[in-house]
Amino acid sequence: MNLQIDMFLEEPSKAPAKTVSGPRSSRPTTSAVAEADMVAHLAATGRYRILTKLEPRRVAEVVRPEFPLRGVIVDTETTGLSHRKDEIIEIGAIAFSFDEHGTIGDVIGVYGGLQEPSAPIPAEITRLTGISDDMVAGQLIDTRALRSLIEPADLIIAHNAGFDRPFCEPFSPLFSGKAWACSNAEVDWSSRGFEGTKLGYLIGQAGFFHEGHRAVDDCFALLEVLDRKGDQGLATPFSELYTASQRSRVRIFAEHSPFDMKDHLKARGYRWSDGSDGRPKSWWIEVDEPDLEGELSYLRTEIYLHPEADPPTQFLTAFDRFRA
Image (cartoon, rainbow, N blue to C red; front, side, top):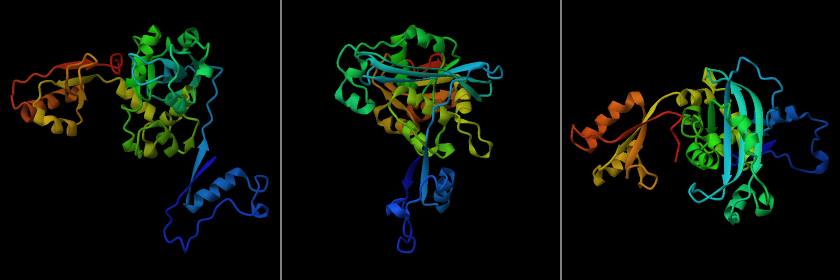
């Protein structure tokens, strides 16, 4: 259990902050006060935020038939940010069952493995992940164990699929031809009261803490956040994510758009591609297929000022999205 103490109390002279420290003789013991009672007491003051350590779910011994679909949460740790020159040094994967409404059933498999890269791990990566050269020496990720989780999967989920998928597909053909979803980009976290989308922040605001930056730990953390029940009957984040993964999307490239229109495009949500990844060198955006004509109309009337402008488009499904 972790406590976050509010350091900005109103009228501190009238309401001094109470702490759990003090003379040893006056400090309550867990034998005298039940943990649940302590939590309830601190929470009732309104001056403490209490975080519970996230405990990994157990792997189910029996797969329930009412959850016929299979999902796999994947997380990678790598030697750097470039899928072209950097390497995977750890993969974590958690397989789980779910139904057609996006209701999560049980954890049905877990894998975590390290792999020695071809060059020493950069010092900043070791500081970030805790993975050292000594830890990966002689290690090899077990693709046979991964296959038992990945092959039956109907959907692969990563919290930054645009990063993980380009690393995973060259690493093993197991990951190719699969539908992918991104829990960062395809869940409207702000509408659920979250002020950020980084996994560590989502976990903290959901009331948990965990050992971050190790692959399996991050997978379990993401599972809990995705399965968190919303207020007022709001669907779980995973239900929203699964629904989003079923939709066709269209990527529109504002190729040859006037340079002085770049700020307008950026303000509308367009992102810049420098052409190094094979896409057109241009500003681009992804929209749901029903919004395609409206976005093309915006480009023709506000950007190109030409009714016959025909910017390139690319139709995408979960099988295509987040590829390199």
